[in-house]
Image 1 (cartoon, rainbow, N blue to C red):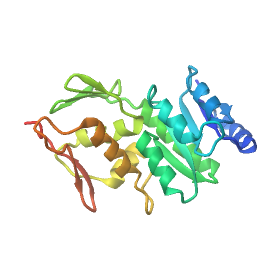
Image 2 (image 1 turned 180 degrees about the vertical axis):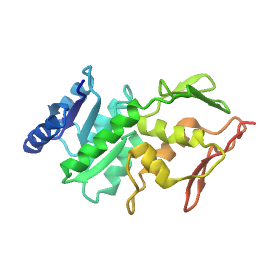
Image 3 (image 1 turned 180 degrees about the horizontal axis):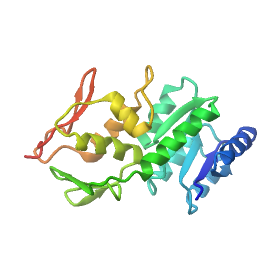
Image 4 (image 1 turned 90 degrees about the vertical axis):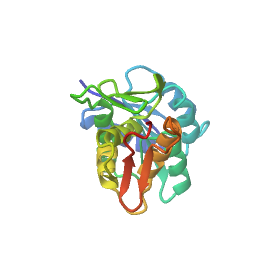
Length: 229
């Protein structure tokens, strides 16, 4: 069964090229050429992921993502102007799963799409991880803190999943990139740092007030096992 993508970009020629290319790879592709249309299309059933350009008329990509994240954890890959760190950081803070600088290589975009789709559909044979006041349901890809549902993006879930699976151990950034983004880190790429920052904000401190996720400078991150005791 084919998966359905939404390409949201005001460059109509690029959209048609991507629709043809991704269609040949087995995807069904919907198109949107302004932010308002993109938001409307993102709410239609049957959508598996969205590729969202930052610069669009009516509503820009940041506004679309901000509105989308209030109601959906649909996987989103942002397209940003080359070297525009601010847009990239804002997108990640708002819950984008990954980003790619324009002009985007279609093969690289395809790899990113497959990676976010693979993460969002991954199921574990171990049903839950129960640490401190966190209960991570790996089959449903759902997190509860003290019984309350915590909304996570697919990328945030994958990062937390690996940290909890290896709680008490230092997880290298490379491993987090591979597990959560499906790729190795590149120079000056702070995507994982931004996602971890979002996780910290959403999780809050442990019951005893301690920081849950510790930065191990120059190496990676560690979930501090038993911080709630």
